[in-house]
Length: 357
Image 1 (cartoon, rainbow, N blue to C red):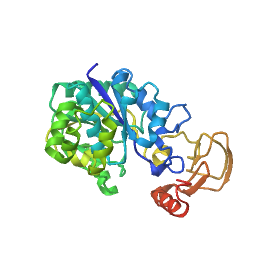
Image 2 (image 1 turned 135 degrees about the vertical axis):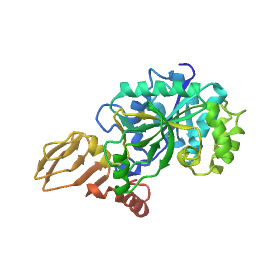
Image 3 (image 1 turned 90 degrees about the vertical axis):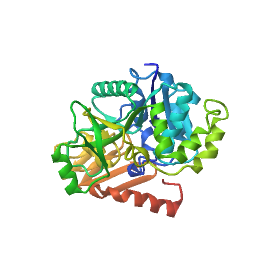
Image 4 (image 1 turned 180 degrees about the vertical axis):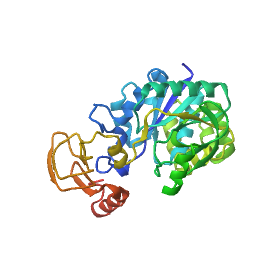
């Protein structure tokens, strides 16, 4: 277990969950289900029996350092990696990987987002342990593919190759499909959802960076004398703006020849939108999901009502709407039009600056 490491990516903004998620307090730091634990805290606790606490690293924006330390007091300052600006997942993962390699050249690493929901944690831990064992013994990159439960257009897909068992060679990665293609993917049985969770040995993924993203590799390789020293942050602040804004999927996963997928089914959801939260929430007989608050609903169907804890709302005759309030912001829009939320955030920023976003 001492060679197992976990990297939690926690630098995103989560604008699709506005007004709950804001620039100052993104969704990974929020308690959506009233459990007393944020999504970040829940992610951290899943690895208790897999990775030693001292081997857990969180990569986040520099502005969120105090929030991360407040929610994960077990971590030292050296375990909270601060990005001076957002540069997508490839630079984020490179930073963590090159730093960990300087600590342990035999490190087996799992990289996970901080804002996913997993309902069967026992099965998840089993899959992660098996995945870490596989990458420890093979010069391979591994991703976790989720068995689809519907023709979802909001996720990327992985086409599995031939073979037996739960581990298969990846045939192709496919971006988010339209409804027609999503139905074909779902019915074929050959496609799994791309979870955005990756496993590898540090030396294997460093070679992948050197081969496929040499400009990124060169920058982080130059920091070997700075990692885990007091000069690390100044080095990162200097080179990070020079990194391309590129995802690990596009930069490495879609191009590498040694990528495998572990076909998994442990109750996974990319908690990325209000619709995904609605799907996961308990509902009344009329399909209304009421989160945290209390509500008197009359002639209402298929709504999601998310107001501050203790607030009471009386709503009459509403169907298929999102009603969300946080701080000084009240949002009411059609549930199926939530793609407009990013535009709402943009407009609010242009009119009122950072006050409401």
